[in-house]
Amino acid sequence: MNIDVTPLPGIGVCKDFPLAGARRRIGVIEHRDGSVDLVVSRAGDFDSTTAIPLSSTEIGVLAGLLGAPQVVQKTQDTLGIGELSTRQFAIDRGSPFDGRPLSDTEMRTRTKASVVAVVRAGEVSPSPTPDFTFIAGDLIVVVGTDHGLEAVGRLLNAG
Image 1: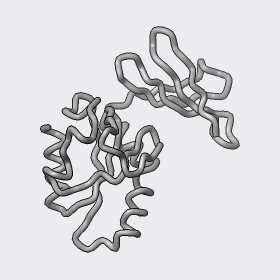
Image 2 (image 1 turned 120 degrees about the vertical axis):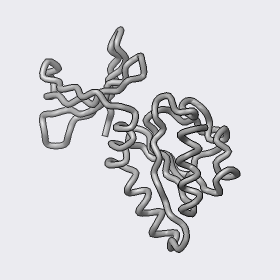
Image 3 (image 1 turned 90 degrees about the vertical axis):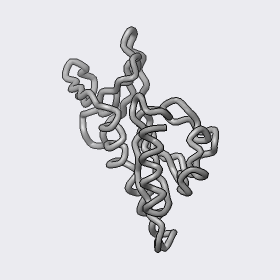
């Protein structure tokens, strides 16, 4: 499926696609100030567009609804679990790690937990490398013990 990218001068960029079998389009507007709107419109009728502003947390939750649960389920199926668990964490706008690489977190050393995937705009990046840069709205899938996952939550919130 093709995603249409439309520059919106003075605003930002719209990324959307047609829904199968419907005369509607769905997508996001990424504003120049970093804010994001979820948009739904009738195909070819931009005057009918409904825009819903989303917070960074809402972006992460929506991404999780659309893609991360599949990653978590596949991870759980292959691990056999035991003492290990997976948890999802959102990178919020203003987070100490927004715009910084995974290596800056020193997550594995500081928490004994590992990032196994990052979901960004519905796209899954499995096994991100240390130079993978987080941005607001990313949903991070982490595997570790309950203690380690609690430490990850504190780390991502406080730095």
